[in-house]
Length: 97
Image (tube, one colour):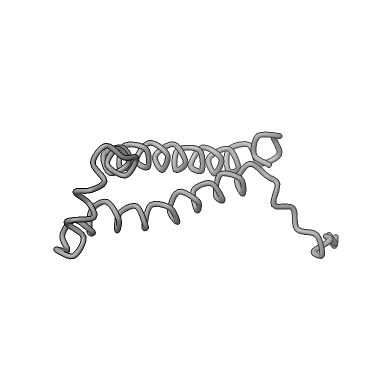
């Protein structure tokens, strides 16, 4: 038996791809946040700039981003693992597609 699929239009609208793309967004925004919030204070050239940002959004983001990204990445990994488990345990269910 031969199964022919239409490869010209791949469907990237499944739950797995949406979660995977959201995780990619978290990872791509995490790297600049680490550089700006953790590595920049180590360079003396940024000291005056960082001290002048007290009371701004940057100072709040420097404290909030680890919490925000930790929960976002943990939730994404949990959803990806759940989807993979459903794909193996119940491959023909609607939740596994």
